Image (cartoon, rainbow, N blue to C red):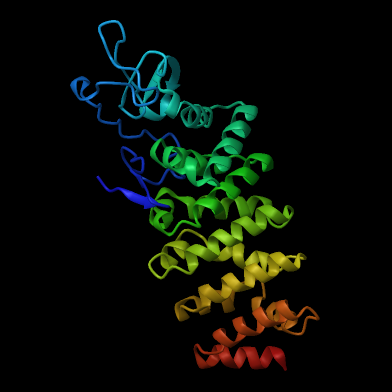
Amino acid sequence: MDYIRIEGVLILPARVDGSPDVFQCPCFTLVKPSWVPDDNAKHCELCSTKFTQLKRRHHCRMCGAVRCGKCCNEKIPLPQLGIEDAERVCDSCRTVTELVTKSRSSIETYLTDSAKGLASFAKHDKHLKKLIELGGMQALITLASTDNSNVLSHVVSGLQSLSTHTVLHRYLADAGAIKAICKILSTVGDSNEQIALDGISSLKTFCSVATLKAKALSDGGMQPVLNLCWSRNDSVVIMSVHTLSQIADNANTHPAIFDSKLNIVPRLLQLSSCSDEQVQEVALKALAILSTGLPQHKHRIVQVSG
């Protein structure tokens, strides 16, 4: 079992039974937790009630811990465990479990509730443990398959928050988070500034990690970045060109950038003469990186600028 630590808290990330890429396989099933043996539990850890012949032990189906009847009386359908019938879930796991279960619904209000709740949990360290251990990260990624912009805004906000934790980068990438972010950016574009900024910020994070840059590109990370370099929003442009510079650090990406039908080099040259100094600075940096590649690429920059 591979535990991780976030802010000193020990966390055991949920594991998927099968491919970890839940963006491609959204009807995922989590590996069921091991149950704590009855004899190991003398009292309920949630309320400190001692177990007796009258105070029976109950196992939470989501975490496997032993709880008292009062702290484990809610029953919730658990499709994420491959269980359609409602099963006992303890108070500690209930909220995240309900949100993950709702993510499987076809009712848009449930999907919105799920995305909003999971994104909120992703932003608070004290809630991260349950979110990560109970499949909340996977549920957020699967919610990216909708076209509802309200749902997508919560999803990309939650993924951006999760991407700030270095220890989660590989888990997110393997689970299909980069594909989910690219899908959202392709769907929404820059019509929603906050979605665009959260999405590009997340891609920039993945592209800045040496071990994940290739994964970010193979999962489609370049196209939305190139598209958003043409945004009319300066904040989006700055973040997009910053991310393009991260991508261009790898000279193998230069042909795709130069050959793009989006005319990226003329766009960068246009931005380099912009009145906004910050836009100008990031554009010049990107051009400088691109000019260090093949001679023909440097010649094209000179040719276009002339």
